[in-house]
Length: 199
Image (cartoon, rainbow, N blue to C red):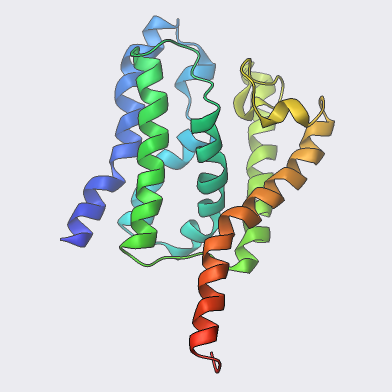
């Protein structure tokens, strides 16, 4: 039943993006900033079947830090761009909440976990994704990952300086946040070593 429930949960994030987009796209004149899933959390939403159906440890170890640090930040400082309960706002909240739910399920039920080395591996893969999306932003005229313009609502990005400096200061902030979201696993490892000194 754990596997079956995992399969059902795995399809919630992609559906949470795809279904409201049928209303978002025509209502916004097919604004490319709103219909292509290139924001990191929207992109990850389509990969949750890899996490919960395939139980891919590499994907979990890399994406855990993006979701735990980035997705939670998106919930605390939302850049919805539309009032509740429009399709655009519902999509925003449902994707982020179900994405966090999938990763919590992977941790609590499937006992998946990241390791210290994954912090730096996750940062490198994030940089690669930033480069790819940054190259797509200009021909598409989009602002995915806010690489061309900061979000209109107050976020941590307001303290990182202007372009291109926020790309560098953002690396430091990401590294700090990645260490913070790794702390529960680090503390658990320390406790286990106290119980089993030979571990």
